[in-house]
Length: 178
Image (cartoon, rainbow, N blue to C red):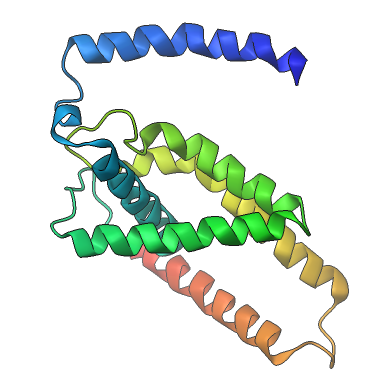
């Protein structure tokens, strides 16, 4: 870990001037309007929307306004808290799952509005790199199932999951060309 410290300084050397330049042109006009608790709620909502749009890409847009009710925000906070507890519990048994999830979280963190807020709640274009962590995890799950071979002992839930994954892939394949 000590050998990584120069890399953090290198990243900070590029981050600080960028952040200061953005602040000088008032790129984050909503920051003063929201307190820390509101920013935590908005960040959990943004994280929830990112995960949903990663799995079911619908209503894609360049601009997403802030949610209109606190019900949506508290629902997202509850779901993301349960998600975090699940990651923590799985960390005890398998190290690969938490690695993939932490890769997702650490790469999406800069755009979650914890520090600065502007007009749009999410930016779909920033989901590309973080999605690598999720899809590597899914690929590992499917590879482990493929190595076990589909046999009579394959559980019904595994067969159903494979069936629905096949339907999912076929559906989005047709949607892509239409």
